[in-house]
Image (cartoon, rainbow, N blue to C red; front, side):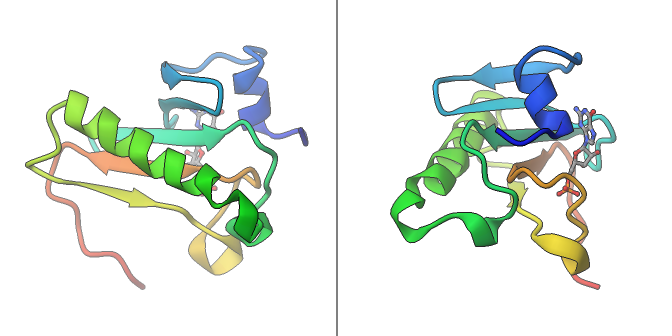
Length: 114
Ligand code: 5GP
């Protein structure tokens, strides 16, 4: 596993508010939330960006999305709504190069874009 702030969180070397973990992923609250609920779902497989996920490992992404949807449902956001986002490289604003899915919820979210 390459060294990122998220791998340190995974190994409990730095603190985070962990809300979910299983054999495949960990989820914790974003340190700089962009919505009332902002949770990051990070796979335990080592991919820097979405570009690096091979076709035969696509279940990694599917599991993140399903876990995010389950979390949203548990927290009562399945009907009010939520957003999942994965940033890839510079123009998308990716800052941590270990793939992760953002879950944003808890208020009406602005339209995304430029
Ligand atoms: P990206 O911009 O790469 O898609 O998202 C990285 C996210 O990681 C940002 O929303 C940022 O606030 C969050 N983040 C960066 N460092 C830390 C940290 O040390 N702890 C937590 N919980 N989140 C972090």
